[in-house]
Length: 131
Image (tube, rainbow, N blue to C red; front, side, top):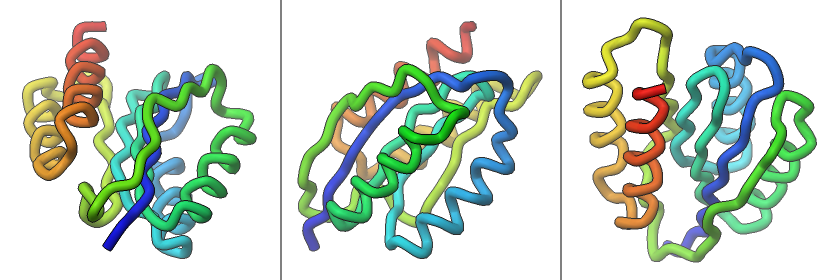
């Protein structure tokens, strides 16, 4: 089944509660048939959204209008033969958390992702871990 995939990055305005973002994202994405991966570390978001094109574009427009985001940049958008991500997931970097465990979790979530998407998430997670 074909799906549309959009990958973007943004910066948070102020400190963002990852649990709250996850709860709202899960509700909205389940309603709209969107899956993907969200990496949030309280200051940056890197997200891939997958689903029907119109639903993904509406979700991105909602995100772009959210006052907690700034400097949104679409990194890629493409049609994919099938969803590369399973059920909605979020990888969050908690302060003081084991960075190796986070990288391992992200690696598991990216198992079916295209090499370019995989490299984007892995590189971002490693850079943010070092920050």
